[in-house]
Amino acid sequence: MEPLFILENIDFAYKEGRRVLQGASFDLHAGERVALTGGNGTGKTTLLHLMVGLHKPQSGTLSAFGRARHSEHDFHEVRCRAGLVFQDPDDQLFSATVAEDVAFGPFNLGWERRRVAEAVDATLQKLDLADFHDRVVYHLSYGEKRLVALASVLVMQPEVLLLDEPNDGLDSAHSARLVDILQQSDCAMLIASHDRDFLKKVTNRAVKLADGGII
Amino acid sequence: MNLTDSLNNHYPASVLDRLDPRLRLLAALLLITVIILLQSRPALATVLGGAIVMAVAARPPLTVTLTRIIPLNVMLALFFPFIALAHVQGLQFGVSAKGLHLFIDIVLRANALLITALALVGSLDIPVLGHALVHLRVPRRLAHLLLFTIRYLEVMHREFMALSRAARVRNFHPGANRHTYRTLAAMVGQLLLRSLDRAERILKAMKCRGYNGQFHLLRHFSFRACDAVFALCFVPGCVLLIVFDRML
Image 1: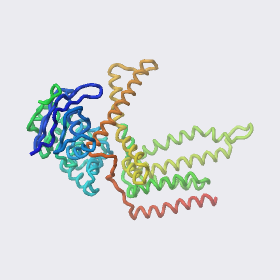
Image 2: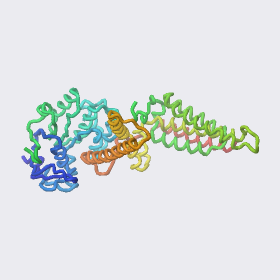
Image 3: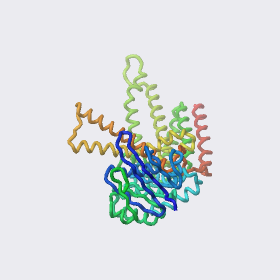
């Protein structure tokens, strides 16, 4: 079966000149749960952002779901099928209440209001967050915000989950819930993290970013 | 208590909560217009009484109400000498009847306006208020600006507190000197930069969830029988007030 993502010889440097990726190549297949490791500043977040078109590579090709992707328009579809969860939940959750935030993605997919409401309820239920439905986002704890941020992406039923340091700053109880949720999900995943124990529990393949390439 | 707690309403559930928030906003707008138009003191006193009845029905916590009403009246009291003495003629010293009447009118009107707003609008949750505004066709940008402000005020406050803590642990004591101004300017600049960065990251996160410029609302309101009853009492009440006012 064709890989979900194929990255070939990707070069990327930030505008201020910092070169992050050089000739990086990487495939992600259905059913794979890939651990993405590498030191600080090696480009883990950059790679995740490249995959959903938030950065454009200077050279190299990127294809997703069987098609080469170049323009903003191409990536719109990619973003609807591959969910990126940001490291800081305050970047991701911008609505006043939990339910509204979780509903944001499905509305963008063009779902009917009733279907959106049902999907929101079902997802919150599944992540054991049903009590949070009408909670105000800025009153949630950090761990709770992270779980809600994950819910806001899972509700869109993505085929691929891209997670940026999902375990960072979580206490053991929230971390255990996160592991449970990820183990139950059947999405392909790419998880950037430094936490080896966590990665061991949720991934089945590992790649490492070093010197601009992926090993 | 954190900064945004003050944006949240702490009102317990009340009869007014059964009303459509849109209706409450429109009712507040109508009554405020009426209060501004009233000229006679009995009419102003009546409308203040009505506002107090509504406020009692909205069951606002006493402390919240007092922290809003007391500052207004203290400020009005400060103006008392200027208003009441302004109409004293010639060289006589004292309070004129005309000035006193004017002052009483101002106190009645100001309190009626504030209490109406507290009862009908202040008891709405801010997210509900934002949505009601969108549904009332207030320009979406303005309503979303309100909602985003509420959401990120706390985050910005937290970032500023982090900066100020970082300065304090390095023994920074603000004073009236160049070093203080320079440090505060750096903090504000840093806050601005961080806010811009955050705004960019938020937009990226929104795009990742398929955002294409269109906002959809989860919350919809319905106009029900109790709303109709309220409107049928409220609108004629306002008309009667105006008629009563003009007859006096």
